[in-house]
Image (tube, rainbow, N blue to C red; front, top):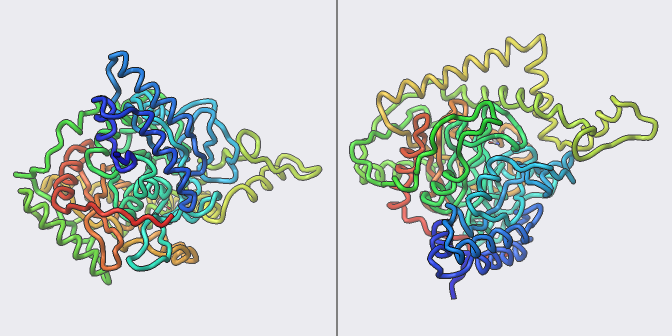
Length: 493
Ligand code: GLN
């Protein structure tokens, strides 16, 4: 008997369409897998009925001979940052606990329109701030991966750590993620799966809880490049409700996938080789170059001179935007309200925010408010905006020399829970290779490369020109075809 939970997006969709099995059988298997994986804490809310209803709709459509959607019958997980009608959408924060939106985010609606079903809302770092899924009000997510021969837990990355854990553990065929400065790519790398952040503006931000609006982008997380391509086609598209939405056709990326890179140039940014870099990360990068060369590409040396300023710039701009976006959580409109006896309006704001936000979120609000304050605005925020332009120009300059860029996704493999929680700066360094592409709004993807000596996955990152998701996916495919990464975590949960 087929274990449906081992199947990805394409295999399920094609199997349902071809009558090999029903979407209901598939949804039932995944619902059971979700129920059996409480130890991972990947889901905040399970929605088995949503998954079953979508499956029945797909089975009925097939029986009636109707055309099936791109994702018909595919059960997915939805990051808790997306507003889903009638289902708690809390961004893993206490301040939004109990908030059930009256509306559906554009991206999730696009996925339901394509025939996907929702298994539940995935845990994440609170308001998408974090790299280890340890800032969620609803508890840490535990990665299904452990070092070989060890039963010590590792973190699934963050902020889309529920998404990465669930996809790696076969609790869903794929999941949505969001990436502001690495939150799709870093967790994908930590858990041996693929994830792509498209060009800024490809996926509507409407109905997605805002963190840093000029950086936030949704994208798919799945176990193959092709599954990512299919799901991104379903998620992306122009949306008049998002003023930064790209008014461009969504290409059929999945139909044009090719791992043949003949004639392509892949840039290796000199500045991404940093002092004291992990030897196994360096080795995986070398392997990546060999694989791309084998696929027909020419490897060229490039320079992105402002790389070292990217992370500090991000940690001014992202908190600045967050402090402004999070001002709306005041105890009046959504979720939590803490109204002490005899309190006035200001007291209610203060009490609600003091109780509703976790430490990392408060840290970002404080930094953001400071860098936007009248006395420091020019020194920090304005300066950061200028440096952001320089980082973007670095990339714009190298497109004359290469078609895409290869880099590591992360500076290390997954670490143990608690290992970096007392040191915010160490935690922020997780995204040192991810943040530059975010500041420049470029499409970027992580694909699994290999296991390190401890048996933990390492990912490689591909960064592309604006709107060239195809180039990123194709280079990702070339690596996938050669890396032959078919490792799955051993089930212990
Ligand atoms: N880890 C980074 C941060 O904490 C990126 C988060 C994200 O991309 N949402 O801000």
